[in-house]
Amino acid sequence: MTEIDAPPSQSKRTPLHAEHVRLGARMVAFAGYEMPVQYAGGIIEEHLWTRAHAGLFDISHMGQAILRADDGKHDTAARALEALVPADIVGLAPGQQRYTQLLNASGGVIDDLMVTRPAEPGTDGTLRLVLNASRKDVDCAHIVSHLLPSVTLAPLTDAALLALQGPKAATVLSALWPGAANLAFMQAGQGTIAGSPCYVSRSGYTGEDGYEISVAAADITKVWQTLLDAPAVRPIGLGARDSLRLEAGLCLYGHELDETISPIEAGLAWSIQKRRRQSADFPGADRITRELNERPARLRVGILPAGKAPARDGTEVRATDGTPIGHITSGGYSPSLKRPVAIGFVHAAHAAPGSAVRLVVRGSELDAEIVRLPFVPHAYRR
Amino acid sequence: MLKFTEDHEWLKIDGDIATVGITAHAAKLLGDLVFVELPKVGAKLKKGAPSGVVESVKTASDVYAPLDGEVIEINQSAADDPAVVSADPTTAGWLYKLRLANAADAESLLDEAAYAKLTA
Image (cartoon, rainbow over all chains, first blue to last red; front, top):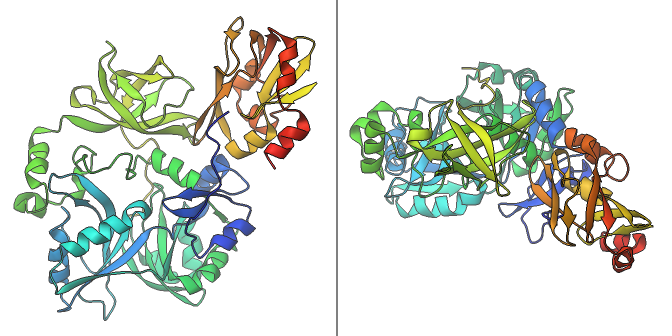
């Protein structure tokens, strides 16, 4: 036996650490934090609970920050961010959220992030950012180094973040804050849960309907407990968060995204709006424009192993004649489909759904098929 | 005679036959198992060589041969339903039986008290 996780050491803790321990979570080191990988029920039970009911995730390790234009104008903040990302930020309506990527000069992905234009009075000229835990320091340094003095970035170091995900999420949250029902997918607004001010977006990373809830660290335990009091809600660890993300076919930084991978290769062309494609004024625009027009040499695909053996991150993918054509970037077991599933990158010539491929697992070639993503349909409320 | 390895396998030794599985401690840390790969009957294993794989939702872990020997039987029900190993790793979830090349080698393995101390 190998690969039993070492206990975390010298890791940061989220404000909910004591709650996780009290609930019997198994804590592991993740992105510099001590995080719950699972609670007593285990990853499969937590995964299936989230797909059928509602799961509550502590994602306070993620980075939250506010980009603010001194002149209080959306256009100023939006243009500052547009210099770093390929999405249309100027065109964001108040209360709307967009998914985008910080790009390096060669069109590789520094991080993927959520950007929200708040609608509330007094928030003019601000954008809310949510960043990956493992990249938030890199991201903030990158953003700050590219800002004019008239725009500032302020990390929200005293804010926690929860995700409430699953088909019962809307019913549960609306009972506590009626405004939750009025948000459509990728909309956000200020709310109150258990007497605490929260900034809520209808979004998430499981493929389910649901919300992400930003709360002051001082109030998070009360909000967490109030949500857990709902019979439909159970706490869910990072293990199920990853298997839910994998089934939903969503990119994870460090796996499907890194500084060498472009958003087009990763299948994220949908996140680059028409205005930005036409202006082509973002980092790496030459490469990205070429890839949009001519199709990149490699593409992100779904891969369905034929047998029962999971194929993990790093597994070599071969054509049926044995030629190496790519590799798996995320692979594991799908609790919903009760079979192994994977995401990877392969040469474009082999990327068509239905293509037969081989996976090299422990020295043996296993049969697999290229399939469309996601593995489990998204259930967003648009 | 019950013996253990530092790699979290258990062996129940009866004469020169050892039944091998993963420990309850290992099963608890791994969580839900979703795939079990067993050696082939007749395979001649060297101590420390990979003899199978147990995979949880998150990770794959090798199972190492605890001693030299020949595989004489495998627990097909563990491969068919890995949840059996998660739920009952020390009885119904055994993995394979080994005819030991030299039964006396088992003396070099950990006894129950030593394994308990290792995992305390």
